[in-house]
Amino acid sequence: MNYKKNNFHIENIPIEKIAKKFGTPTYCYSLSTIKKNIKKFKNNFKTINPLICFSVKSNSNLFILKEIKKMGVGADVVSKGELLIALKAGINPKKIVFSGVGKTYEELKFAIEKKILLINVESESELNQIEKISKIKKRKIDVGLRLNPNIDAKTLKKISTGKNEEKFGLIQKSFLKIIEKFKNSKNLKIKCLSVHIGSQITNHRPYEKMLNVLSSVIKKADYNFEYIDLGGGMGIKYNENTKVLNYKKYNSIIKKFLNKNKTKIILEPGRSIVGNSGLLLTKIIYIKETNKINFVILDAAMNDLIRPALYGSKHRIIASKLNRKIKRKKHEFVGPICETTDKFLSLSKFQSLKEKDILAICDVGAYGMVLSSNYNLRTKPAEILINKFSLKTITRRQKLNTII
Ligand code: LLP
Image 1 (cartoon, protein in one colour):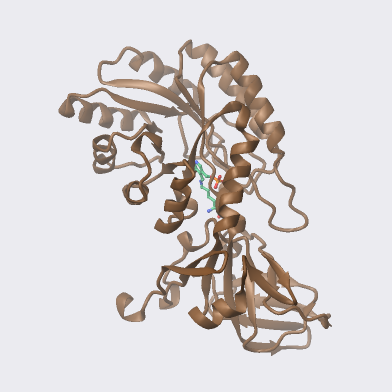
Image 2 (cartoon, protein in one colour; image 1 turned 45 degrees about the vertical axis):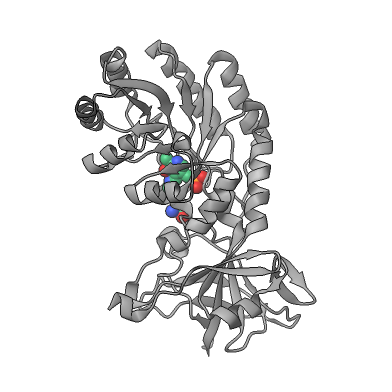
């Protein structure tokens, strides 16, 4: 994705052309970026040879999942819906893991019937439910146990999941108690220890601490886990100031861990596979200038992309046509929704803009469309997949009459 002759392109197509053809707001994704990310991910972790399960919650578009599947990647799912779509994309059930603190009886039963690799259990009550199903089905069920390692992932508070005050996983005491109670169970086979401490992690140290906790818990449990599922969370570069995770370091600390613990590693990346592959194309509806502020009012809003409003995250904004003329004034890029937090970015200067110009909000391939809503009774955007010169509609723009 870059400017060619002053026009911003995604693969070989100018984004202005996509906006004209499909309207705005529209998500578009670069297939080659997704493929490149998967190759890079595999390469970075080559020496530990993990089972890679793409975290479907970050982007659950069927066509994208099909492409990811073609590259041999499995899935990490958190609902019956995600499990269904992963299976529909052709992902082998033996490469699917199921996490989540509140899986219902129906969801567990469905996952068991589909014979997925692992259900990562987060409470003793959930384990009891699985045991009930196992007795009915007269089948031994493979499960993982999710540990809450009480680690600060040093990421945004709202996307941290590894501390004891957060709802995820089992605290160490309960974890060890469950191992003791179920290690010789006729109905359940505890095959995996799983963790996930948070998302958008940019430093390897929290992972290092997490692995140290795992080593100590494994020792205390005195139990052989066939798999260790380390979750996802690998951060990406959203702007000049964000650091990126040093994958080599993360890989080498996992390798060190494997020297002490013989097991197969599972990784559940989401953002690092699709995050930088997506743009949200939007058109300027109005520009409203006040004494101090230039409000750039876009046709995309917090219902299309909620990350800035929900987490205060900053996504770069670029213009479809490069203009070297700079306007030095505070710019507020906002949506039309009746909420003050419906704001994407504040900048002290931007290239000179006019109404109807096309802009792109960057790095929205993960947790973009999946978190969209119909707030203010706005329809959800279309999604387009770009592959070199070809464009494919992978989600049609929602129509008002389907939501009214
Ligand atoms: N595994 C588990 C168990 C998870 O809960 C998550 C993300 C992942 C894997 C994938 O993490 P990733 O590699 O994408 O960081 N909506 C927030 C992010 C929420 C992440 C939830 N769990 C955002 O927009 O930043």
